[in-house]
Length: 101
Image (cartoon, rainbow, N blue to C red; front, side, top):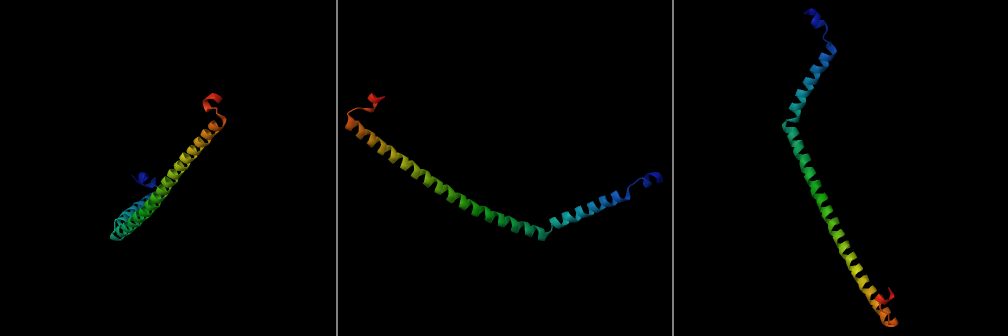
């Protein structure tokens, strides 16, 4: 039996015991009222940040939709102008676009 006790690594055993002690103390600290209060404040700050980010994202999305709508309108106006120009060319030459193809 003494041989068995001699083979135990005292340094490793001490490190294990210290880890258990710190782990137990850590659990007590993390579950304390002060820690819970800190968690609550951090969570509240995260929720405020989320709200701010969502406002910015909504604003960016609205701007993108406005830009898209204006771009579509520009393309529609350009298509109408091109049709008018093509129609004027056909009248001037007396040749339809189908005949030229």
